[in-house]
Image (cartoon, rainbow, N blue to C red; front, top):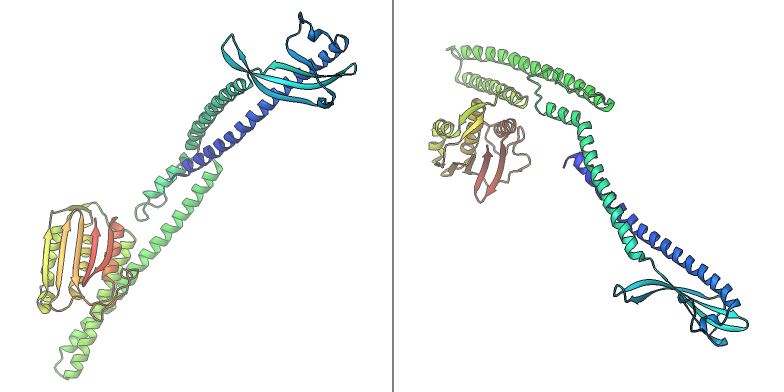
Length: 421
């Protein structure tokens, strides 16, 4: 989830929660305020009636009583409660609109000229619930509209403000140390983004310098190692050709020559591994995986006959992938070599190509293999002195550089490696 979407969503949820809480408070405050106003009107009406009834105590009992918004009745001394005013809501049926309307009622006890009375005053409620509901709905619509407008405006402004940041990410995503010196970063008037651009530029410059130094060191070291190793091998081969050497001396020299050849091969392998990690290969070629497999199988006929291996090849289609032809060939040959070298006598190898996927399975020793280390450099479970534990490490780096995936699993007696292109 993008930062802009995440922050906007949190702000919207927080605002809606606050809106719900304040809407309830608004309703309660408005209702209390309306009832207070109605109760104040009832109280004022009571005070006027008290003054009037003290001078005209018989008016409420006359047939031509001009006042009809209250009821006035005598009570006994036991029912009289001094200073007690009770406010309550009531419903009265109105014949005009044929419905029950809300009213507010005041019940009070009075003492006039030594007699006790019960006074009830009724006033329209002003339909407080409808008024408050109308106000609440109107304000809610206004606030929701304001919220939506603020959300959209905030998204547009934030997108505009964060535009240099996303352009910077896009520039870094396509930046390659082996192609450019310093990425061309988008300008910005915001100080924080200017500081970020400066920091990224400095980091890119330092990384480029380290990359060039490392690349130069690896190439120089490889060249310097190859030269003396070639000289040693040439002189040893010249020495072994001399007739005065004994058989034991010749055997010793042959062992030295073999070790020298292994060192030369190891040096080239490590150099290749470093170049792959530094992304020094173009990956825009069309490669036929099936053709490489068919050609590479011929290199392992000797191992196949020596161990009496059964090799099964199944090609459902002939996928054409995009990558580097040389790296693809190295990948497949390393995986095939791993399947042949680490096999058992009278074992089997199965190769399957289908739907942009290569699966190579082989029988082998039942010793457990650590799946977290199998693609690490110099990791090996075999006792074969001809292997260094670099074949699968190179295969893994090739798949990472090419944007593919490489996985290992063990099923029954089969060691299976799967490549998804």
